[in-house]
Image (cartoon, rainbow, N blue to C red):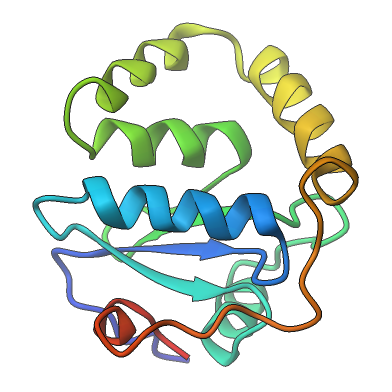
Length: 139
């Protein structure tokens, strides 16, 4: 199973129906000056391919995955902080939190993820990118 993204790019898989996740994607797009990231909903065909390839339990990881063709996957807080590290100042400073033990970071991450629909709402269907942004998304 081949996942076709350029080697110099990283793919962010996100919950396509989550308002917080969609807002986060737009935040990354606006600050991704070096064009490092591409995007796909977890619910998309490429999302399903990565979930199968890496045997990801979507009951445990259901909101963000960072796929790097050269290094594999990161998920939860590590994915979010690795994404932040690829953005410009001041967002990239958040990467300092990678020194915090994973179990602590993921506890905070899981608390937010568990409440994201209640706090931020949910869409009926995945976000459809505008024509200007379509080249940043895989289906």
